[in-house]
Image (tube, one colour):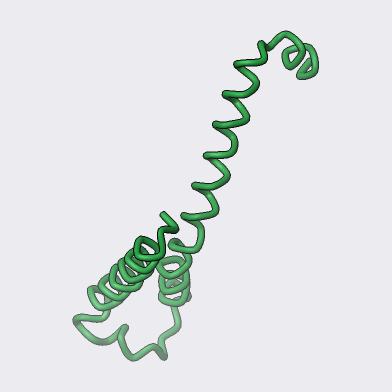
Length: 85
């Protein structure tokens, strides 16, 4: 069925869809590394270990959120400076 739809699509539509697919691929490649930092920090804090000192600190949660924001912001700025975004 996909072959049938592909054959009936005009040359212009096929070119447009290839362009859209290329943009989606590029965006995905650029966003994935930026999401690594908050995912990593969130995963560590989500393990529910009682030995993490910050868990018994009143500012532990805000510190973790701030750390994720700072790391993500730093990566974003670095990517912007190198024209990766």
